[in-house]
Amino acid sequence: MEIKINREIRNYTESMFFGLSMRQFIFSLLAVVVAVGLYFLLKPYVGTETVSWMCILGAAPFAALGFVTYHGMTAEQFIWAWLRSELLEPRQLRFESSNIYYEALKGCIEESEKEAYKKHD
Image (tube, rainbow, N blue to C red; front, side, top):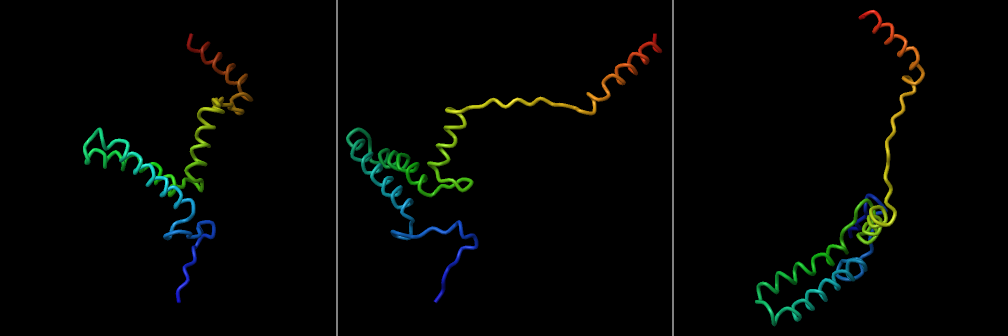
């Protein structure tokens, strides 16, 4: 008897249907529904090969949403975070440098530059 244990406990997902998690199963089912819907919608207008490619292209994003994670976020969480940061709450970050050493010695530097300018004249 062999028991598989993940090295990282946070990576654990429980398999519900066909070795998929509930989330993966729902998105896979949604991809199948989209593919079948596109097939019956487009079949009267285009050829079989074109319909098959359109079904694949139409279902692929829905299938990918169930399996994609980025920095520990699911695809929906990532899309929402991106929308918030780029469209809903955009912030312009400005960089203003501050050289404390230069500010402290600004008077001395200006005086030495004036003296150096006078010597050259």
